[in-house]
Length: 191
Ligand SMILES: [Zn+2]
Image (tube, rainbow, N blue to C red):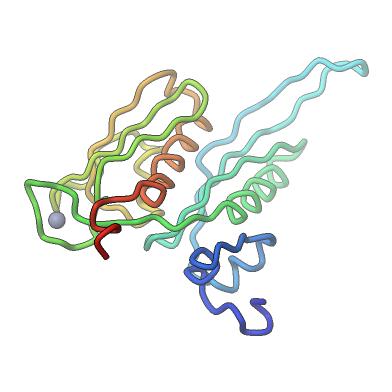
């Protein structure tokens, strides 16, 4: 559908309830997508054949303007782990709804989130709270990187659980931002 010109933007993909099945689709529709390797870990597993060790990479992609994906991938080589994680992140690209949900600000511009959202992954819970323009991002490095890729500029964040787990933290922020669209507001009803 992308090749034949039936779908011209990722907005159309999501408003029509379609899903991204190939990472190349994201490359075509979001050419300005940026990629950040959030971290690389080492995973060891005991198997019948002995010890098996692999690298685990966590990658976030985003266009700094309302689209975000986070993925992970395991492989014997770091490079391949990163590639796998990048493909996963592209397949999981979602739209992020932005707004000015800060009562102190009220500028109406999409520099923050429209309301507070919470996301979870494993034992980690992350709250993202709208802040006034010029505040910047208040939180850990992983959280700041993910929010920046999504195009969110001014927010406070609060984290609970074992936030040293890099992957869980990144996926919890992703989950929180996904909730910017799954939450129906009063304004959506009256529209
Ligand atoms: Zn504002």
